Length: 184
Image 1: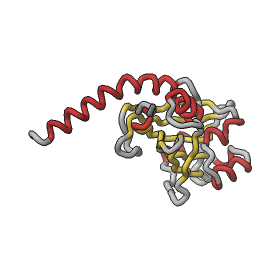
Image 2: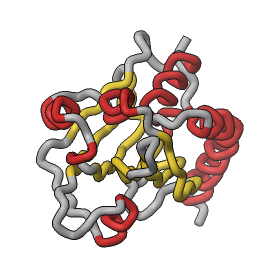
Image 3: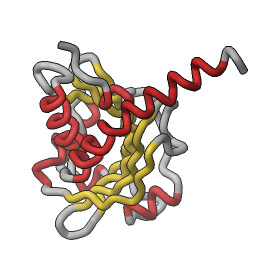
């Protein structure tokens, strides 16, 4: 117990320091339909990196077939194709978010699908011209089951077109890097 006490005290101190920064971060995320746009704003205002450009480092080998719950949330049948993207959203060299994104390729423009399959452009930037809105399904301080250790905030949401059709179900896992003060 004596050895564990300093670690416990340090963790509690870190958590106490992080909480005041978590609330403003949550507010920035809540104000945007696009996590990409929100993270870009956060990166810029917090001085996390210059330039404050968000990139999606895609794990192209990742495969995660959609569950029946994912298909239901997307409003699609069992045989309709679903794309999957597992990315780390970064600003400079800081990983701000790890995301799982199931999307409906048939509801996107062909050039959008090509961009998603071949580049590090974030999903929100690619599909932004469609004018989507975010339906927030769940939010949790800490990690949801799909999120890695060290997640400080988790979101689950469906992105919808103006006509109500879903284009994506996303699970976003926000990292401690969002709560760090910029150097300098």
